[in-house]
Image (cartoon, rainbow, N blue to C red; front, side, top):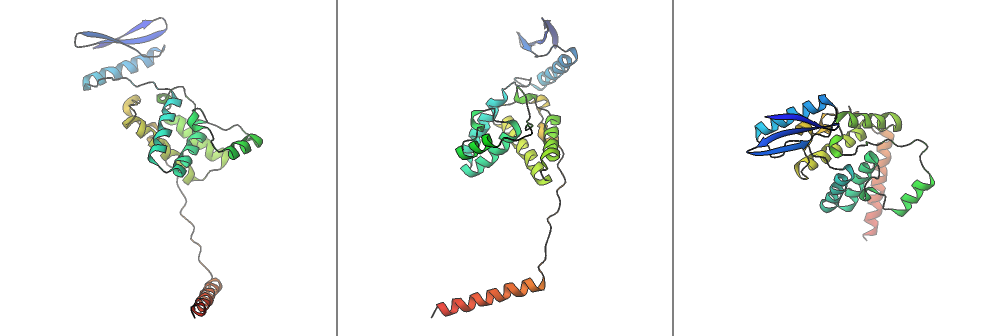
Length: 220
């Protein structure tokens, strides 16, 4: 159905749609990767997909679009919080991820971190794989001491980012899979329940009684 051809160091897939011959750049010079992409192409053609191969979108472009989506659908304060997570994960690689608060920006310049911050780096959004995400979150836990609950927030945000990109932005991931969804959740500690002592309970009841007495005097 399809065959590999090589032009220079780059492999292409050549196939027919109806009577029209198509040629697609596989963006690799490695035979094993080219064969795997050809297999994916043939499977997609059998399923009847219109454009079977993964897309190639610059990472900053997708992050800009997602950030604009957040500000269009959420309260500004909630969107700011999510964007701060995106900036921590990818760095300020898009204009929308720059720090807009002048006071915070000046403080960051005055007190730079002694340890360079780790980010997920890729030229294209589709290049990021499960291992990249798992390694990034593990580094945050190890180097900055974030708790499991915060680690899971990073994971959940990336799942949401990829779901949006695949379902609403037209991104086609390799294998049509969300790479963040395969990252294991961190086990969160159950919340610690602290019981009050009898002395503390008596003190609160006494304070409540005094407040009620004062309030009743003020009514007359």
